[in-house]
Image 1 (cartoon, one colour):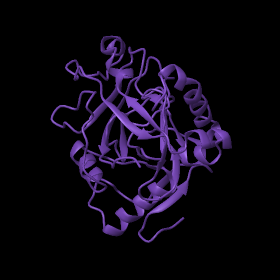
Image 2 (cartoon, helix red, strand yellow):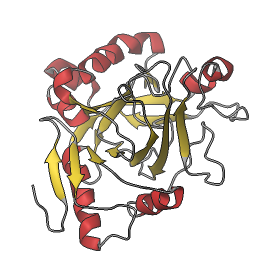
Image 3 (cartoon, helix red, strand yellow):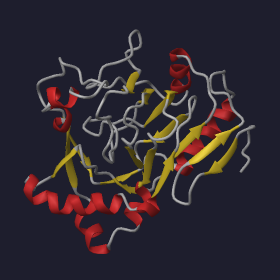
Image 4 (cartoon, helix red, strand yellow):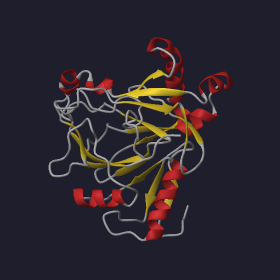
Length: 282
């Protein structure tokens, strides 16, 4: 599909994801190109660029076209670039990060709009990332479950990461900060979010960070939450992206979840991630 600029958009699946061609994101872009890229993001939830050569400075500059940069409060950053997060798995690491279906940093009062992940070194095979369209998840949720959760809020917490820093850092090269704040980050968000640009409803809960439904204990919440998690990961809602060096994925954190596959033992993978500031979920 051609758009108003020289950009070409090729959908990846019927549910979400599209590859974008005809643009060098390391160079200054026209207002028309930026508008078309943003529209592609809104239309497809996650967009992919191939064969890009990005320095950290260029990565930051491209990200800033879509909003302010946000630093990850839990993980360490690239030296000299406090708003770039290294996502690295060394050949001798047992675990990666992001190996659960999740929405980035939903434990923040103001979660990010999106994330931009750039491949600096990838294995020949393995290390794919999956994405799930949370609009479709909500649209296809059984009626009784929709009625149960629509209009309700849930607590999101960072305790999945910060309650076991030593355990998580063992076997992982992407480290949680040792001086991460001792108090829990806890945010209350609607379980069904209305996207602030498209106006569409989508499910907004995720396994590692959604802790409990407001007014219910965690034990009371889990049977409902587990049903939502199982529905969210159905294959027909997803796309799978196979990385190459120089690829960049830009996903809308408000309307998709993602999952990082850990199927490349003995191989090295290095990515850089920037994050765009978002708005309070409504």
